Image (cartoon, rainbow, N blue to C red):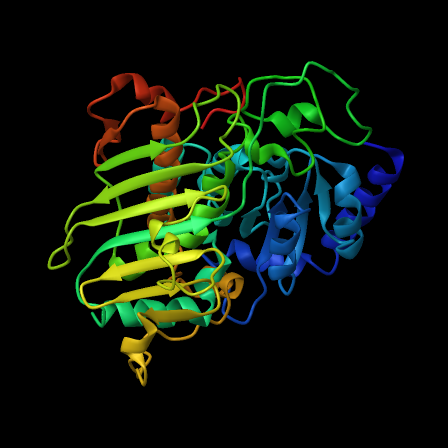
Length: 430
């Protein structure tokens, strides 16, 4: 650490030792703070999406900040001068006064950070997808249940009003039985061949900590900042980035959880990087009175075949299409339309029965304080993340997969199990 940072840490520690000590002492005698107390929150990853999460919890006591890139961390650190700064979250989690942790890092760090925080008894908010691998998602969800901590995955659209109104329409069976859903996103996060150049690591970036559990490779600006999503070692392309947001809606509305088969269509799988486009076909079993569902995901410019039929679909960007026995519903983050529109003139939506959210981050904060529920806890979001990540597993395996969710096994293709669970560099194991 630089001399300036050492001095800053000294000043921060002095501040905590003074005015903040009453909070620490109060925590020691109670299992959780009262609803009127402020949480002591630590944030891992404080630029980009993590920076937005930091803003979402800024009304609480921000006592620790962690980022491996001191250049990107400079601004948020200046906004929270009393927070202690770390480059290694493992060191940060030794700080005794932390109640709750926000994880806003690249995907490959999610599971190690969330697991360590949960084991330490902290409440955890983690960005989507919950983890980098299917195995990790199950492990993190089980640890959250064991530790009985308040958890929330960062799919912020879940808290908005439009999704709630769509869920109400679907769950009131206004479209009749739904056996088919299409979900699409035009974005394309993809990598390429591994670069041969080895430029120097920028000053202020701890490259070894950035890699964390991933296999070592030389630094290159095609990974950091913000370009890591296209590489298998760090992310999972557009599917991992966006499907948790859009597939959340049908999972919620139709009570979906685990698919039984997964099959993909796309370019040949690359050993290093995610595809520019992909179509993933998931098949879910019946749920009580609800029939089986086929859900198809598209990205990179691919869209459902319904858009090819002249006049059948409205002009629409990214979204979700529910196909029911009595009609269809198309939705995005902010609006929905029943189709064919002429058949639904004068439609009166059902009376709302899902309360509006107090806010995605605030919901988690209140749960930390009161023990109440969250809508995207790690049980729900862990299963959603597993499903999303299985699409990449099927793509990389190059075959249709038959999935035994209870035992976390691919029953028809044992060779594909290599993509369910990854190995870790020493010191980063779960």
